[in-house]
Image (tube, rainbow, N blue to C red; front, side, top):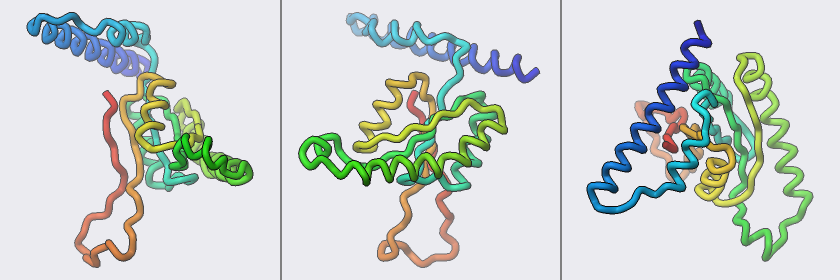
Length: 185
C-alpha cells in the first residue's frame, strides 16, 4: 500500500511539473515569445519515479534534535530523500585570497560528519535515503549549487539563527521558532 502511495505522489509531482510547463508555454505564446526550452528539457530528464529531495540545513556543524525529527517526519510523509547540509559561510573568494588554514577546514568537516551521524542513523532506521554534505560559501549560493547538483530539491528545512541576547525581547508569551520550511519549486 505504501508503494502505491509513493507512486501516486511521484506521478502527482510529474503532472504538476507538466502543468507548470504548459502554463508557462501558454503565457509565453500569448506574449508572442518562445518558451525557454533548456529549462523544460532539463525537467523532462527527471524521471517521474525519482523521489523529491528535502534539503536540511544545520546550524554550522550541527543538527538539532528538533530539525532532525521534523525532517524525518516530513521526508517519510512525502516520500523524499534527505540531503543534510552543513555549511560555513566562507565566501569562495576568501579561499583564494586568504587561503584559510586547512586544519580549521578539516576540523569543521570532521565535526560536521560526527554531528550528522545520529541524523544518518535515524534516517536509516526510518528507511529514508540520506546523504550528508559539507560546503563552504554564502548561504544562497550554496543552496543554489546544491539544488543544481541534486536536482529535485522541493523543500528546504533550516533552523532559525539563535537570537542574540541584546536583541531578544523578554516576553514569555512569544512563540518559539522551531524550524523554517520553504520551497525551491
